[in-house]
Each structure stands twice: as C-alpha cells, then as structure tokens.
Length: 177
Image (tube, rainbow, N blue to C red; front, side):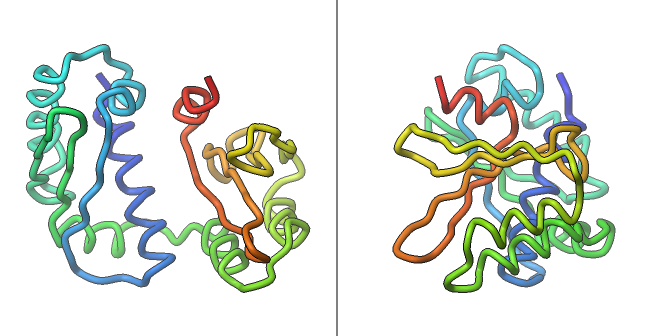
C-alpha cells in the first residue's frame, strides 16, 4: 500500500482546484472509485478492505491534512478533506508554475492547441503529443520524463474553447481499454 502516493494525488488535485478557483479555507470532497484507489496505492483491496485502509490513511495524514472523513455509497468513496487540508496545500506546496500557466492559458476563450503546446514546450523539450482518435479527446499530451509532472492531459476543442482533463498514467491507460 502506498499512502504517500494517495496523499500526493490529493495534494495535486487540491492544488489544481486552488489554481482554477482560488484559495479558500474550506472542505474539499474528492470522489474515487475502488479501482482508482487500488491503482494509486498499488493494492488489490475489496471495497470493505479499502474502507478500512482509508481510515488508516486518514490517521496517517491527520497532522498535515486534518481528519479526512471517509464515506462510501457502495460504488465509490468520498474523501472529505477538512479546511486544515486546504490550508496546508496553500501554505506548504510550491506553486506549480507549469500548471498555473497551463490553466491560465486554457481558461482564455479562443485558446488554441498551439497556445497550449507552447506552455508544455516552455517547461520541457520532451513533450509527447498525440492526436487521439477515440471520440473522447482530440489530443493526449504529457511530459515524457515526468517533469514537471507525470499527468496525462487530454485536450478537446469544444465550441471554440479548449478544455482539458488530467489523469494519472494508470487511470488514463485504464480509461483507454
């Protein structure tokens, strides 16, 4: 089991949310299907075992993220990160220059794929760019060496506006099966 990977994932999502929406000391709710949690933590847990493991995780991160509340509906888990977690991410994580620039570029109406690619190329010369023909996304883009981040960015042009989804490598591969 890899609590560090799950903590890193949560911090990354909260950080992205704060870039998009601004920082607020508030509860953040994150939803995960069992399969995603198993991939992140490199486990093969049943739903009930994962519920127990998430309670252990909550204790593990309590000093940093606060008491993470765990709920489930039989199909997915909701992790409620308390305001202490939002505060921790805001105060203790370095601003991700790439992600901030990327989000601020993408949010501009009329942003083109070329403008988005410029942002990637400013941060690395090892950028994987692939036109995707699956009907879900138009482009898959990521940093081949995992720097400055390891996520897979799926971009789509919708009504003159570029949108994106960000996935871990494992979740992207599972999505494309």
